[in-house]
Length: 447
Ligand code: AMP
Ligand code: GLY
Image (tube, rainbow, N blue to C red):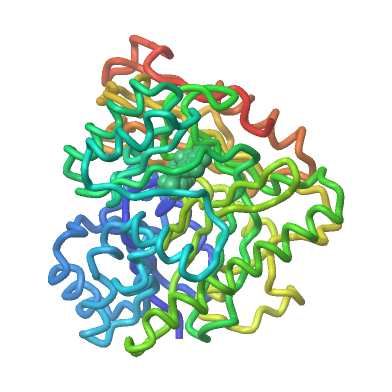
């Protein structure tokens, strides 16, 4: 029997997950709650307007519609224990329970966890008192990194280059409502890498590696400007590296993943389940190819997911097979991180954002991307959009992504840029006043 799936969330990540699931021959129906303008436009997806804060509403919907599996997109509901609540009702749901999601929910927990289990990470100290924190950083070398303990939607990390900036970040983060603790840590240099695994219902040691991706975190080109949720992504970021380097990294990253899952399971040994869901290990690889963990996320990345779903689709891999750990007939190796890749295929994701993002930005303008011809290699995933009266309106900072999969890196990148330039932005609903200055995108994705 074909399955009915409910995807929770409203970003580009959830559009991509829902789209990929809707292409599975095993799935009859995909609901997204609340979804966005992009999921509204997909013929095989239905948006349901339920609040992710209202677990009773979601549980009732899943029961009423006989949902076979619910997939949680964002971290908030995971950290708040939504999976635990679904489980109490014997509803099948993909995502870690609260005791596991704390790996993302608390930076203090994650750093202590890595220290206790000997997982390489940046040196750090934690503080709850601003005076003590300022005394600690007074003579420290800059840049330095200050992190709020709790979830902060990408706004809880400050990379600071001067003592004044650091003092301000300490005051801001400790007085914000994100947390009453901060972590101050050593600034790491190198290349960032997102290693994401599917920890499926088969249990520990059957994790499936998704292709490595690289997320472009800063707002402006070449690591300038403030941190964002991500302004672009590519896979495979190390496709031109020497093969031995890639093998070495593969082994080191696998070790970190196995240690992480074994340790968090052991930490939760009194809880009657193991880690279930996606786990995203954010890594920094230095110029000697040493690796340190920057962060854990207990979900897929955004915009990495948009990149990954188009890649899986082009590799003919069904996402629901990975989640349920069905035998996958068309691939021999469940490690999809492509360390021994024989093809040069490449996927490029560009984020179109509202001017001002990640700070205050304009919204309520109109988007026309009809001149982009989408096909199985070119796909737009929406984030901050709504679709009403046959018109797409912007409602968020990151508006959409243009994703291109190609046989080679250069073509993927140039086609992505060629297409994003075709998008027209208008101030008015009748689409007569064009104003491209309302949006921006980074020009260096893929470098
Ligand atoms: P986090 O949420 O901890 O991953 O931090 C968000 C982003 O801040 C990372 O993806 C990096 O770009 C940057 N970042 C975090 N920690 C460090 C660090 N110790 N050194 C350099 N950059 C960092
Ligand atoms: N792109 C980074 C994240 O999803 O956390």
